[in-house]
Image (cartoon, rainbow, N blue to C red):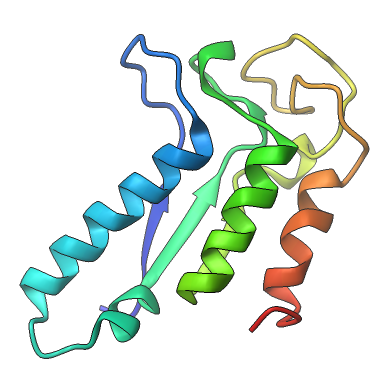
Length: 131
């Protein structure tokens, strides 16, 4: 296995989520699973086998699971520090603020944001500027 991608959204558990904290928790859990599978690999190598996929804005469950631009900043900084393999998001076309208050839309994030705010936030990670 080269990379395992976590899709850190659509929990559907009825709870209100801090999506950045839940991303870290999910990735730490995966890191632990990979450590059990590959005990000979270093912690750094295991982090480099993890990818994180976020859904910008209000996910399919609803406002309790809203990934904000502030969450994106926190996740990008954490991902760069851990040197994970991949940081991306589901549905590029959602990266705009065209429908505030709408959950699970295919065409917008459902939050007030600048167009491409999530892309520009993750750009530091994907461009290698932080690596």
